[in-house]
Length: 151
Image (tube, rainbow, N blue to C red; front, side):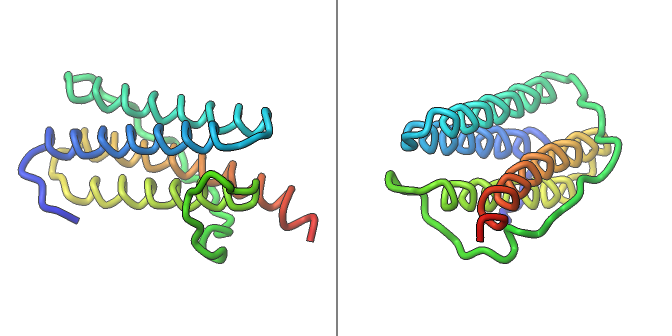
């Protein structure tokens, strides 16, 4: 990970990553033919935009409350092969892309938290890590119920 010179640099980096995540889910939503699947991805794009707004608020001096508890990890994302986002993704592959993206976001926020000495910023970043863990868990549960259970 790159070295950051200030809390603002950490926040700007995280804001950019949230924008990228929102764009990924928007793209996945547009690529699917299933309306219910499109809606799921649109909801996640909106949640990522919400994370971006939270980070922008923190940058303006507002604090985010830390997460109360750690989120369960089914570890499904650890055992599926990587899939590249493409226009012809099926539901299984779309879930894999989403699980892997949320896992990476969780790791990113934990790494960013470790890179700062600012306790308030660290708490905010750790809270966002837990939100990303919740997203990953939702995708893992969906994968477990609709892909693994079918096999």
